[in-house]
Image 1 (tube, helix red, strand yellow):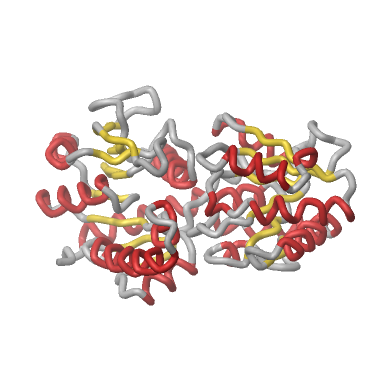
Image 2: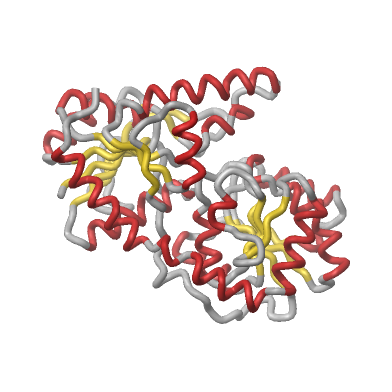
Length: 378
């Protein structure tokens, strides 16, 4: 099968969407399918440095987050690529300019269109305005746009049951849940070789305000009182990186934090192996790939009880949930995970078995086969 992934983000960006798309691409290609990536970027037309069959489109920076790009009128070229490469199924992984290009090409060439909703854009209105009433208005507008966009797809994929409920509640049709999936051969328990004399609480992900690391910083002193050897290892980069470093200093806990940026995707598993607990305070997740990776490596997860995180973290089973702004609750959850690590680790490993990339790829292929023979939605 010949499949085109349309996406707003691709390497050198590294985020949950890129990780999910690239994992699916690798798994599908292992099975003999051809996957073409059409992505926003500033590299011109075609580049092979990050994999074969990857096409970049001239783009401009997204001002609130300059590492992200907005493709500039990609429609005619995208149509030519899909036509020339005899694409059978178009799979849109975004709803920006590249996502609209997927709609355009699907309609012009009468190709089946799958849309995956990876990002809670309705939770990111703070990038546009700091005014709360305006944010509420923009959130409603965002859902209207998502409804318009995804109801033009033949099927809509979401990575969690939480997102499935949200989409249906806002009038989006033909929604099914397929986990983004992780490579369980790669992400598995490993030997701790660093920080052996410290209890390591790990965060792995983008450094942005919606990841809510402030609650971890405010919880740090409380954790230290019960776990004197604690070390918070924060792995990631992003526009809020300096803000979080300054916040740790303001709260007098900079000595408890180690910030690490520039980690290559191929090296992330070693940080899971050298941690004891994973903290996941995010208020932006549609699933939470880093949480799944941590669980697969046997780490109990102290996670925010918000959006999709409760779909993967169960208190007493593989971690402990806390209210997203509750620093004491966060500290209690971390302490619980440390004290019960051995038992929770077993539950963590077991809980990710349904999220293997192998299983997710099989479900995607079944969906592709189904839309190829079903009548097109209008």
